[in-house]
Image (tube, rainbow, N blue to C red):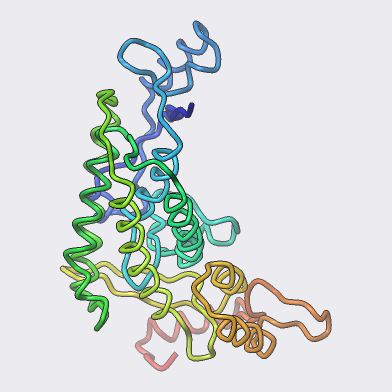
Amino acid sequence: MFAYANIPYRIKSYQEIVSNPHDSIVFDFDLHHKIKDLVAKMGADGKLVLDRSGKVFKVNLTEKILAPLLSKLSNFVPEAGIWMNTLRPEWNDANNALVGYGVSMVTLYYIRRFNHFMIELFSASEDINLEITEEMADLLKTIDDILKNHQSLLDKGFNDKQRKMLTDLLGHAGSDFRTKIYQGFTGKRTPVKKQYLIEFLKTAQAFIDQSIAVNKRVDKLYNAYNLLTISDGEFKIRYLYEMLEGQVSVLSSGKLSPEEALEVLDNLRKSKLYREDQESYILYPDKRLPWFLERISCRLRRSRKYPSC
């Protein structure tokens, strides 16, 4: 019953993204013009992915549910979140500045909620086998193998080299999948056992939960966004200040116990995000930014080798 939109943007290969996360998208002008011609001939269906006979390529709900999950997991950075490397910010426009090297725990919190829902959904299904496209099945198996082969890292956590290693493996899996589907689906379907899918979701949830635990801050709140520093063989993380959306999303993730959720709410009231005069909360702490002359003065001092500025 479901279809894919044929978007004339192409995400670059994983290696190109790592080289320059600020330049990761290509607009396919030829495909754009082809889609316009198809719309003129067949209407709005011309904007959808077509099969090799020219008809709308249809998939089932299982595939459509897996598509965003596997896409996000292919951009998963352990203990940091989902890498925002496709020139798309989160819901708040202020986070445009994070596009490229930003990593979203907010997305990971919601993925955790989504993942938990899917476990319940498929557990309740009477179907033993679920049929998905050959390309999606390959991506599912590849990501499943990667995660299962590195589960031993969850106990001690990830160092910067291990973090890059796992991110690289997942990123290349997503990149290979995109290369295939940009050339067109073959139309072949593969049965996937329901129990295999449930076990995969539980494995993914173990990695998600470990990252959530690491992103609990000293003030008992949770990180919303982080920054990635890419160096030779390492992915380093820089944690940012507290943000309201991080607390909202972690509270809805399903990861926290009632006691842990109450702890977040209590500490949120004590945090810089609370406006006592309004009896409400603000998105970010109200920080005093340096005046223009202060910034200029600091730059001049740095240029004269005053490292203390």
